[in-house]
Image (cartoon, rainbow, N blue to C red; front, side):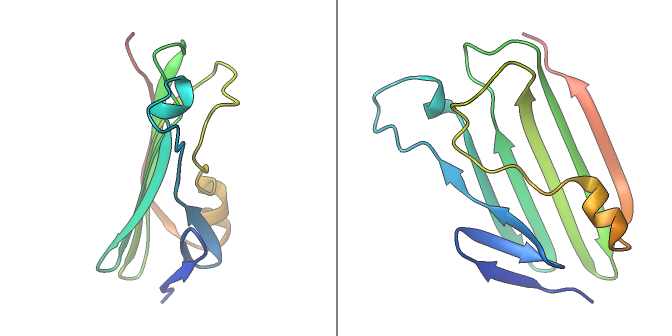
Length: 116
């Protein structure tokens, strides 16, 4: 069974890394202040949450997946935008395909629009 390991700035499972990130804008404003990625461990579950949207972005959507290998679970939720977003301060999670290639079972996969 894979295990969750600490890596600089985050966690990894089965060789796939999830990293935390936040703007650090210090209250100066701007779209960067609304973006982040965070990762945590709860028992045998690795949870990633990310947000690349801001008040100025349009065509926003959410996507994610939940995969399992034995007792290990990885859960991903991302608020994203199709607008250019160079200001995103976080790190994207590994793609679902990377888990499928390593033999993980897909329990859930979704993508849906966020109303504006």
